Image (cartoon, rainbow, N blue to C red; front, side):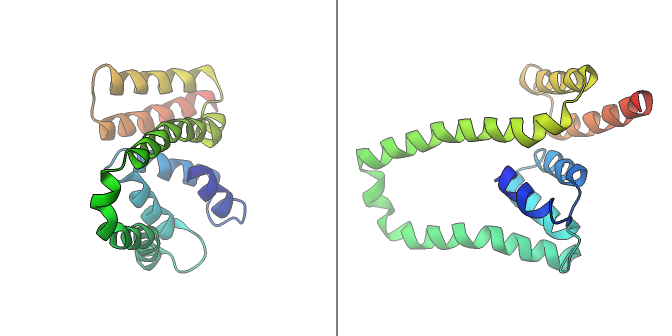
Length: 156
């Protein structure tokens, strides 16, 4: 979703690439990052509706398809859940999602955010804090933002 969203909102100038990636990074620190990011984009985009109405519209647009899909498939859920071929297909989809997430991490996040060794060090430290020391994501996001701001004062 990230590359698709970026291609649709950054080139027309509705939001800057930096604001897009900042919102994406902040959304990753809370539950439901896709929905949080949709609300952020709806509020932050340049053309109207933006602000609170834009956020509400974006949230409705991101929730509605999955909500309708759940309602449509609910009568068939019991029968589908018991089929081995459906379970196997879902396992394949889950495996493919890992690759898609890695691709989204590389482009545009890695290619636009990691431009020097200091950026790599901050990213590596954030990764270690999250995975090894189990620090809460919101603390890492705030710490990363403060560290990035401090580094920009020294390297610009």
